[in-house]
Image 1: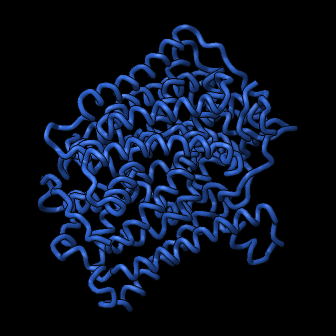
Image 2: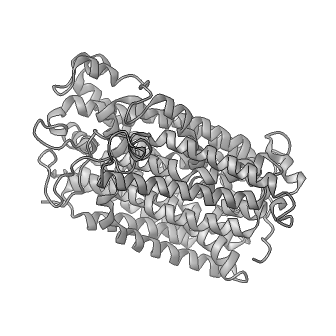
Length: 580
């Protein structure tokens, strides 16, 4: 039997990182999901996919990483020579976001609560517009290569190093672990592979083509992966609707574990303010904090926009990705509801532990014929690898450009920086595999876990960027204070939530109100308001006290925050930060 991670439950109290139910016994094979025997056509499709991804890395390595001949080698490796066009970048933005945690987690959350989880996907279109029309013009006209570099120019080198270190830690603990958790769950459930083999194969192959090909190879593979993923999701959704008799058949009769009223609520976006999973008020107010960070301020996503040749291409790519983000509700959330309809007894046994994260594997195994099964397995692998390659390239960029060349070895040659980036990809792959034993204790609700961590840790970053772009009086002293207050409160909320889960507080106590019943979306909003207030107040009080460090961006640069004028100009090379 295959060794599986503990499986989730739909029941929890406050929708945070510690929201979990009694886990299944580690090391046992769940009775609802048994390994399948693949037909020759399925094996052929999966093999062709892996061969194609490996070939991309080899081709770009043979071409010198996709450089444009004579361009700076480091810029070519980390930013694809700033030569990418909007269709490729738009598809890459989409597929970098929609990873295996979406295929597994969104379907699992939808099988537990309905389509309300799709609000996270639809709101991304607003954040992409904010990226294209507010932040991208600033980034491209600054000529930056990493987002912490903007902080270095705006506030000084100290904030740049802080953000780089924080981002690397967050990548390792959240994005990499979540992607590997999801993909390994699918592969282990479907094939019965040991989880270490599945995880090591995915991480190793992704790190290889990322290290040898750079961002250009990543974007090209993302285009192919987006096609595979979308085709696979469309076919599985179509087959699933066919099994239940279309939308009318899906909504007609509730599963045995639900009443008609409960089943009807599965098809409504709105949830009451005290809903434990997806309160609509919390999503309207608090979800945008994490969303702005994820889409506008995270290197793994914004690096694609930084590689475009002009601001016009950047805006067009954001529009394309925004339209594509409408699809996950229909291609990933509805399949989860279909799984609840078809496999209610397996997902929610009367005398067992609920396992909504098995919704996607069950659909793969029991609804798809040969050929389509192989296509959708390839799509699941594509989703995982697209998320991993985004993090690998972003992490290598942050380490090499902000910490290694920007701090440790300012005189490093472009060739040396690229080699260090390749070595760092390998190191990150090893650290990811070493983190796997810890995944079991993170959370049973993988989709909510990821959103909760972003809600707790994104507010300080959102504060320093928003005020840095929009308010000329924002300075380095205020930004440092915002970081200090935000991360003290954010990590405190996370620690308190885990502690209260292990040692339940007295109902009605302050600890119960703050760490158990306060939903993470409301907590994230309060944290963001606290960071903004701290940043503004300290900046106002410290005018002139930081020796001009906080005014590193001049009036001309700040005036370029709007989307008008100079929109088609190529990005200019960024000046180096002053020595720390």
